[in-house]
Length: 359
Image (tube, rainbow, N blue to C red):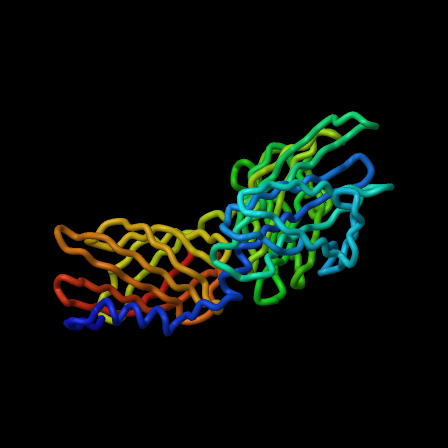
């Protein structure tokens, strides 16, 4: 460990963070878009996308419809056929609009992205999707789902394996392929069957029942674990009968690492509990002698960057951790550098660490 007493500690950590990870438009703005990983139309299905503009300016953008890997999909929206998979839309400030996705003939499915033309920090829309199932002219069921949040790892508990449908889309903003691993566990936390590898090129969409992904596997209650090498979006549904659906949350789950310091300070950290929201990272850390603290950060250019702060007795401190190289939530171990600063004491410490995944 290196200990330095300087009067410009805040500037040291500020510029360290800036140097280690610049945030470009590509890093930030894709996560303002809305993604619905499963949209169904035709046959007995309609999908209604309801959006509201919470910004201060008119929202101009596109609804982009795909199936496959950026393969344009052309359903009908509000009686207007989509051309080339893209429908231009605009929503005035404070206004709400619904886009009814239908198709004549048999059922088709794909995914939808709502993408703004202007990359503006004040340019926000919010919304949800509702599936409607009909028999003739009578609606027999409906279920609403929120937009998908990107994740690297997710856990999906279920009551009946054979009734679960899963839709995944590779929405990585950097265009990288995703190496997705799926594991099924019983209600007693025992892995059942083999790990399923599901590669997805950028923009690729896959929607299947779990029994299709794991043929021959019979199970009642349990959970599905999903790990991806890059951010992906997903949606899960349980289908009790042909016309009865319910949505299941599919969001990031946690991974715990045991962190040990090196460079003369072997015990500065304890457990590090992390989860992701897009490229944002949140969690908790145990800092020995300093207590437990919340932390937040980003994955920038593949590297992990984390910040934490707190008090020890009457002294305020703040800290910064970064990985040495590429980080994926769920990897077995990673190394990095840590910094802590004590502004009132003009004190600055730095060292290295190794983090090991806790099974």
